[in-house]
Amino acid sequence: MQSILSKLFRILTIVMNTALFIAGIALCAALVDSLITLIYTAWESFFVDANYNDVVGELITFFLYFEFLALITKYFKNNFHFPLHYFLYIGITAIVRLIIVSHDTALDVLIWSVSILVLVLSLLLVEKFVQRD
Image (tube, rainbow, N blue to C red; front, top):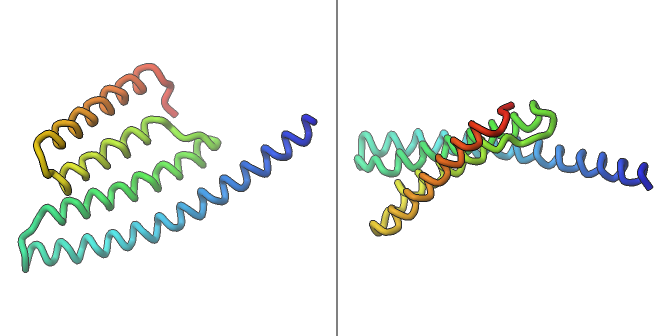
């Protein structure tokens, strides 16, 4: 029974690592696409429309892809372990992007700002009490 479970664990680990590798390749393609969109949006904003909110939104989207790629890279470098602080960084960046792109009401911005505060406090706790890889 023990050997069957260990074989199953190895098979599932291989499947998971393969899926993450494929996701990493897809994220690389999305990163390049995001970079092209960023350049196009920046060109339009600087010379045609002067709408800088779109440029900042595209820039933060680019960094989100970059952070996800860094997370996958760290997973493989840290012996198949996801560092918790990377998830917190991604969450903070995603909420900042949401505030920049969609800031309809002041209450929404306040709620998202409190969410960022909670994530930053969580990051401080993780940095203090969890051993960093």
